[in-house]
Image 1 (tube, rainbow over the protein chains, first blue to last red):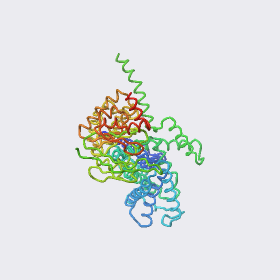
Image 2 (image 1 turned 120 degrees about the vertical axis):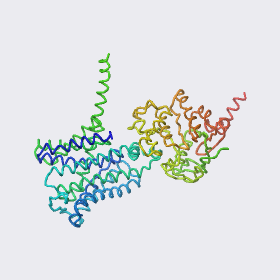
Image 3 (image 1 turned 180 degrees about the vertical axis):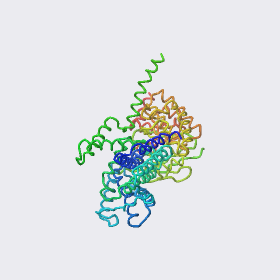
Image 4 (image 1 turned 90 degrees about the vertical axis):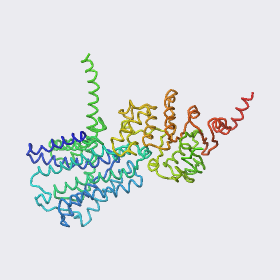
Length: 327
Length: 250
C-alpha cells in the first residue's frame, strides 16, 4: 500500500483546490492542465516506460473525442456510455496501429513517423467524412445535467478530470509494480536482451500501446464533454500530439508523476507568457520550445529526474557534514 | 553416454554470398559443459544466434529436448529453458542490478515478491550481492559479465549458452568466475560455451567442438583437440602444424 500513498496525497491536495479557490479562470486553467496531463500519462506508458516515442497520440485523443461526440449527437447514445465507448475506441486504434507497426518491426524514428502519419490520415479523413461533421465539426447540445455528463459548476468538471488523472496514476503505478511493467522497461532498455530473457517484445509493446491509447483517448472524451465542440484540427491536430509527449518529457519520462508535473509547469508558463505579452499568437509554443531546451539541457530525465538528482547530491553533501557533527 | 539435450544438424546460414555457418552438426550432452572454440570470424556467435532463435537457419535443423525448435523466436526458446548471454554485454543500463535480474526471474515468477526473492538469490550466487541496488551502468566489465550470467540464470534454464563470458576479464577475475560456472553444471544445467580463454576451456569442458570458416574441423576432449594438427593450422595458418612438429623433433 505504501507505494500508493503519494498518489492518494496528491489527489487529496488537488481535490481540495475548488473548496478554497472559486475563481473560474483558475479552475479552467487547472481543468485544461489536468486534461493535458491525462493525455501525457497515456503517452508516458508507451513512450516513458516502453521507449516507443509516438509523434501521433492525436490519433487516440481525436478518436476518443469524435466517438464520444458522434455517438451522442447522431445516435442518441447516453453521454456516459459514449465516453466509455470513446475510451474503448482509443484502445482499439492502439491495437490496430500497434499491430501494424510493431509486427512490421518499426522502431525508433520510423515508429515515430508512422504514428505521425496515422494521426494525419485520420485528421484528413475526419475533415471530409460526413459522419464527423466534416469541415464544420460536431457540436454537442448544451444539456447541463449529470446524466448528460455536463455540469453547471466548473468544480465538478474539475473533480471528474482529477478522478481520471488519479485513475491513470494508479494504473501507471500498478504497471510499474507488475511483471508487464518489468518486461516493458526491459524492452525499452534493450529489446534483444529482453527477448533472450523470454520477453515477447511485440506483444508487450502492443499491450502498452492499447493502454496508452485508451488513456489518451479518455482525455479526448473529456475535451469534447467540456468544450462541447470538436473538429478535425482540434481532434487530430499536431498540437495534442506535441502536448502529449512534451508534458512527460519535461516532467520526467517513465515516472508516475512526470506528466502531471510537466503539464502543470508547461501550462503555467504558457499562461504567464500570454499574460506578459498579450495575445501574440504562437507565443506559448515559443515558451514550450524554450522550456524543453532548458529542461533537456540541465536534466535530461525531466524535472522529477532533476529533483531526485539534486536530492542525491545534497544527500552526499549532508552525509559528511553529519559525520563531522557527530565527531 | 549422456542424453543429448541439444542437437544441431547440418545447420547452414548464408548472408548474401557469405556462408557464415556451413552445414554444422554438433550436440551438447545433458548436464555437461561443451565448449565451442575457433579463430575469430569462424561463425561461433552466428551459430549461437541460430540456436537461440535470433537468426533463422538457411538450412538444417536445431533439436532441443528431442523437439524440432528450428527458427523458433528467442522468447519462446527462453520459455522452453534455453538462455544465452551476449558476447557484447547488453545490460538494461538505466535499471538497477536487482531490476536487471528481476526481468529474467519474472519468466517463471509472475508475482513481484517471488521474482524479487529469486533475483536476489541468483544475484548472490554469481557474487553480485553487494551490487544489487547499484545501477547496472555502474558495474565494471567483470560485474557486467556476472550480470549477464545472473539474468540468464534467473530464467531457470536447462541449457545455458555462454558467449565469451570470460573475455575481457583479468586472470584473477577468471579464477573467480570459473568455479561459478562449474557450480552451475553441478546443479544440472547443461552449458555450451564459446570461449577463447583456453585455460578455462581445458579445465571446464568435457567435449570441445572447433569451428573454422563456418565448419566443424575437429571435436573431442580438450586434450585431443589441442593436439589435432587441423586445429593448430586453423589458428596459426597453413603448414604451421608441420613446422611445429619439425621444431619439436629437433
